[in-house]
Length: 88
Image 1 (cartoon, one colour):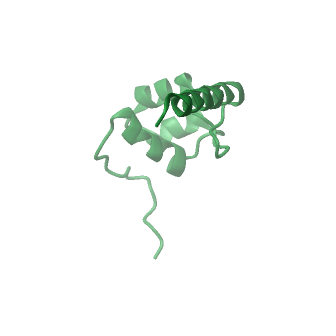
Image 2 (cartoon, helix red, strand yellow; image 1 turned 90 degrees about the vertical axis):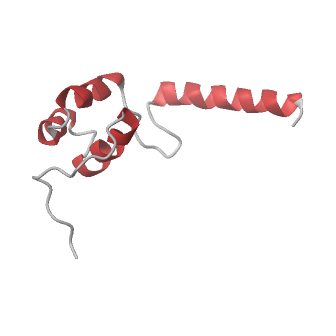
């Protein structure tokens, strides 16, 4: 890989970072997590019911909260008792 390709990649990465900061969304159109939301989730862990109520309407319990936990370092979590059993 030559220097020109590296420079082009760096410019593209900076352009995408600016776009993320400007729109608050990733390239797929999903909302990015704001620092306030992450702090709320950390403070309320493992009380998912309260976290869900505080983070509505932008975060859903099944997608937003459960997918964010491993990124915050909460690995190996058990499902909360209030979660309904999966459909068969």
